[in-house]
Image (cartoon, rainbow, N blue to C red; front, side, top):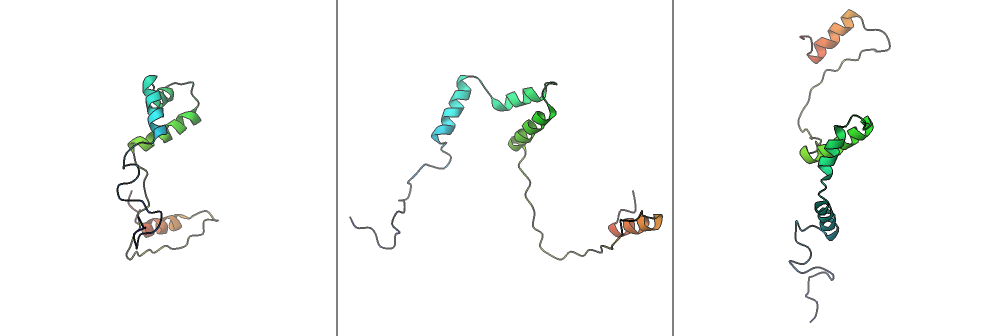
Length: 113
């Protein structure tokens, strides 16, 4: 049967390929291995974070990894519109006087504490 006109060669017919959400073979194998050995890597990381002898650097890495499962990473938000900023220049190479501090606080709206 000749190739249909207007269809690029090598294109897949509708419905071809793995369906969305179907895990690949390697993922299924790893999950089965974890189940067979009653191993949950997330629970294990939490257990290790609660042990005092585990170095702080390791705990920090575990917590960073675990956070991905509970809290999505924040994305930058693009702002469109007009923004007005009155940013005066203050020389920070010299110590600030009380007058300079008061001026800086009044410009950024943090005069009240």
